[in-house]
Image 1 (cartoon, rainbow, N blue to C red):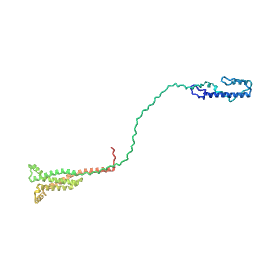
Image 2 (image 1 turned 90 degrees about the vertical axis):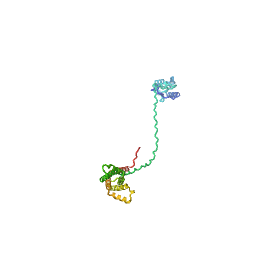
Image 3 (image 1 turned 180 degrees about the horizontal axis):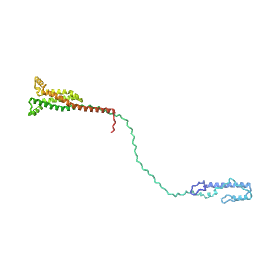
Image 4 (image 1 turned 90 degrees about the horizontal axis):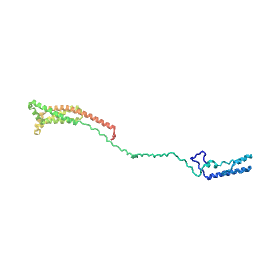
Length: 320
């Protein structure tokens, strides 16, 4: 049975079927008829009430006759109005299914949302880290101390050149004192002296003596040159005597002649001059060599300190 407040177009409760509604109506008629019969049996039989067009007995006349006879006919409590006779039931159309009202609202077409594809980033391959390998670091080499022997040899060459000049000057002076050298032949005598063994042998011996002393002293102080410079002077003195033997020459002399020549040159002015010149040049050029040795010593000390600092810092890993 539909709701009276419902309107057309709204969904209604679907009835169970026409046969069901008819059966219920017949049951209601049968109950009403049975109630009417029971009332007639207990009271005065009333006139048969005509039924309406739908077959439902008209109870209004029975009620009127009952009032006129001062006899009240009670309507059984079980009798209820027939739902089939209601106006709502008559308005229902059971032959067709109600169609919902059409929706006149415009149809909105929602375009599909296209999501742009994102670039696929390849994940980096995970590579297991290799096991750490031992790193062998070569220890720094200790600095080699610098020497002063080569510098002493170079300074000795200059000292030997100075020795040759001074020795030649003394030679010419001695000959000038003897009267063998004059202003006219001084140049000729000097050139002749440059070609003799007597000049160059003492010079060479002096250089050898100076260099050997420098090799022994090496980075020593100037005091060592002052003290041991007498040895270089003695070598220059011996070089003068040896030069006289080479000038003879000694391979053409007998032993006695050679002995007399050596004895004559022991106290010769040039021999004494060679000793003095060799001694003094060793002192003054030795001062130069000693100054150079001091500088070399400072460099060696600084290099040793740097080496010790490197060892204390340990190996350093440098990324390239």
